[in-house]
Image (cartoon, rainbow, N blue to C red):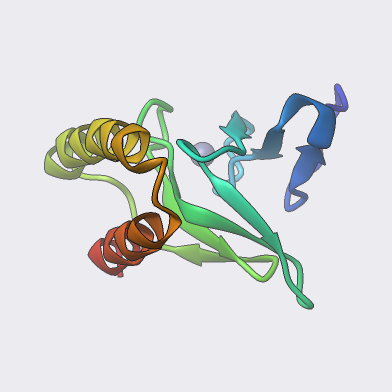
Length: 120
Ligand SMILES: [Zn+2]
């Protein structure tokens, strides 16, 4: 990971299995997203990278929530108190569920689609 990161660039360090970017709201927070089965997945598209699922920075002061799709940032608005709680809950559930379902790729896909539809 470079020391000085630039806004609007998604850095991916394959050897660390992690991507990082500066928070899309411009607050300067470094957002690190581990790329593995239980965390985020990164897809390289023609327009740029896509990160699944969404990035929810509820642990940062700005609490921004957005998707990165084809190199573009799609805003979902700020997290409310309720959503922060829900997000934490879902994140926990997601990890637990993914650990349970690691053996079955098909099930996992279905689960991702379900997760994605929740944030639409
Ligand atoms: Zn921010």
